[in-house]
Length: 490
Image 1 (cartoon, rainbow, N blue to C red):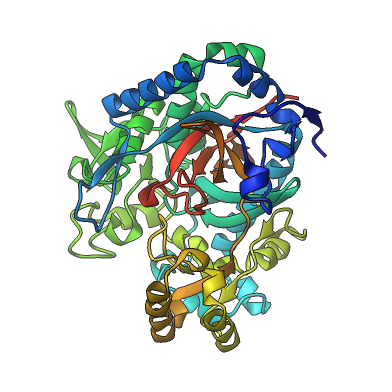
Image 2 (tube, rainbow, N blue to C red):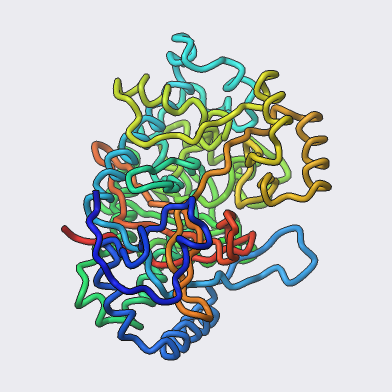
């Protein structure tokens, strides 16, 4: 139990406006939770007009350096600035330790699951998950059957989306092990806060996140093929190019790691290896951190029309002569129908009960579940099993009768494409609004690095915030923003 302090609150009305949700700063009238104690003392003395100017300065800075993202499928301008809120989300050390244990357990289990389903499929033989969930899954990659990645690591980089509903109640909302994004925003958010409010970091002991690029470089290098000829493996980030929604992040991470940023036309297969074009000719690559989806990675193996991949790269990979991070075929672990089996997956591979809870999930592919979902559609959140970014999702309580009717038709037509979950009362944290501090719903994406014999979890991660009052949708593509996440030292 995190202790609280009695303080007079101004312009913060979570308990009045949303009495059913857990607020991470406020537990009751005049009761501030300890993690926010020092920050609230500081905020009471701060000039709100100055804080708003700081907020405008942060927006100008993000626009200047190009921290934008693309919005697909809309007629208006497709490039937008991700809104940034200058009030940090603060997590106590004790809370973070609980999350770390659960995250590490989950990522290790996912890596073991991926190794198993591309080899002996013991979990299917044991009857813990149905065979059709794998065999009929579009994200399952038969080309990976029998392939063991260098160092046995499939999930080099993972993002685990978490939500909170109470003091000690955390849920995993979904797993991201294909090509998890957002870490550049985590790093830039912290850099901006350090620049704007150095006095806060002097007053409060906040764990650093700045070592992430070095840890990423080291983790990738440690997963290089055994045939690497040097103690300093050559690492590159493979990007689809400047028109990709996450291009800023690709360039940012390559720069921060001291790695090469390459596109498909910079690479070729040569003498059984992947080589990169340089001013001194072609140089062999050992590790490729790819931000290109499986389908486009190798036109000789997957989509023959792809212009984003490298012809023959999968042959080099199967021969063990290059590391691809994350491994091809990892996307099946992002499948939201498979997500509902994660407690069984964790227990099967670790022999332990899951530390972090799953959100209750109805698989619409099952007749009884589909019937329940259709009857209760207005109260549920429905998601595509392979969806991301908040696209293709229905939030029942916020949907109109027309939207509910249209989604019902989709469910009846292709039930296998959807899962449904209850509408959780997500926790709220303060943002800086026109009137002062105001509560908004959030989630959290911690970033995890896996290398042989170790898992490293960055202290904090990316907090995404629903900036619209009452909204539960935090995705930037759907109007959400981000904020810095502070994990306190003991």
